[in-house]
Image 1 (spheres, one colour):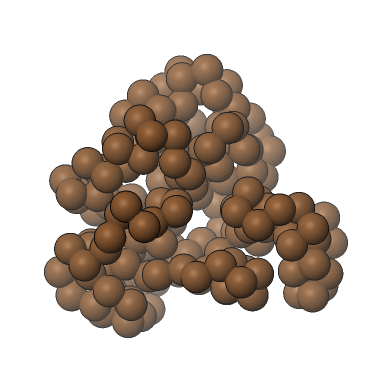
Image 2 (spheres, rainbow, N blue to C red; image 1 turned 30 degrees about the vertical axis):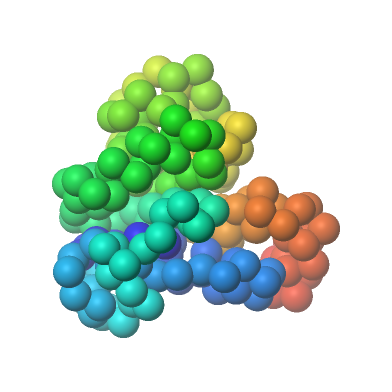
Length: 178
């Protein structure tokens, strides 16, 4: 999970929590050059590592939380965008929630795919088949609409990485009714 200043904390942390409960090793990665990153609501967390320390060859998925200006700060991070493009070319898993799917739209990654995002960002999903569903899984790309859909997004990512049974088990454990 990649953090830029101004990220949306629930979209990041709820997903991380679900994935870790499901046995997925998730790194919180700062793109700011400092491990402490402050959210759009002034919550500062300590990430696990800096972008420059990530071994992308061993990374299974890129996850992008929304929030503003967090989404803009992620999109303005050249090294992260280079890796995002590489993941797309290699058909490696990519997930984005809220405003962050706009990054994928700007990069042409959503053409012909079902996708969703925060309502005011739908025009940025260039070429996508835009839905109002809480979450969309289209091949190796998972998108979601916003903070209220963070649990759906986390469970969709967990299902993609570990299977539906693992996601169902965590949904039951956190008392989440789908």
